[in-house]
Amino acid sequence: VQLAESGGGLVQPGGSLRLSCEASGFTFSTAWMYWLRQTPRKGLEWVSRINENGYTTFYTDSVKGRFTVSRDNAKNTLWLQMNDLKSEDTAVYYCAKDLNGLTRGQGTQVTVSS
Image 1 (tube, rainbow, N blue to C red):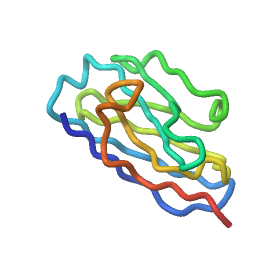
Image 2: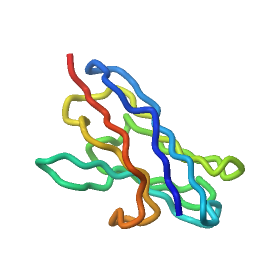
Image 3: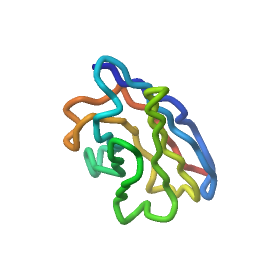
């Protein structure tokens, strides 16, 4: 299993970023997929999840209405569109094959700062 995140960076509060995750080594189209994030203070926390066909999504309360998860099974790719970013969104973001992040990528840093 390989998961490779990209798209992180430095953005001002209120800005947007779109994270991507390219998956390989497993049948992506039959897997729930997850976005997690990690900070030194909070540790690893769940951000969003999406079902196999992309029609069912869930978000942690702090990102509802600002983040959108999507996928393209033909491209084995997962995305996280992040809008109206806040300083508390600063973290390393991971895509994962499981809720606990046991199978996740190397992560991409998102820093929200003025």
